[in-house]
Image (cartoon, rainbow, N blue to C red; front, side, top):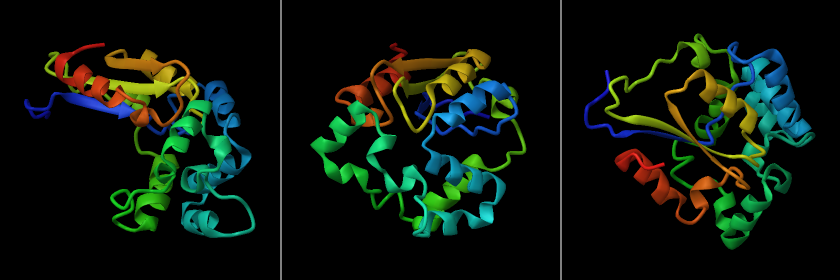
Length: 192
């Protein structure tokens, strides 16, 4: 049951699990192959051996998840420009890790890329069937952390999601001047 005071929901470059059964195998395989090899390993560990996720991402022999370490190759050209304007953005903010690094970063990988009991692509229904709110998905077409091809597939399967793809943008969408304002306007005023 949705509270009638909820204007909507905005998903900004949300993580996508390559193992969701609703994805065609070739599509998820192609998108997975676009990830840096170290990230492929980190995601495999989170999916197939979640109890090793913390160890994998804190050991020193191999590079761990790019989401956690933030090496330059996981960012688009625009992301790197935005980060150069404020290098502090690369560091997890205290609020993000307020429950501790394990709970906030490593468990997120285990949950996000683990085995799910339902298929979000097939099992989620429109939370606003009477148009009393909206769900928006914002995605940069040059995002190197979240493949745009999987987001496009999701919105084809769930046409009630209002898809906003930003050409030339990467993963750091909220740091683009005026984007946060556009997201709020889209939710509250129904603007595209």
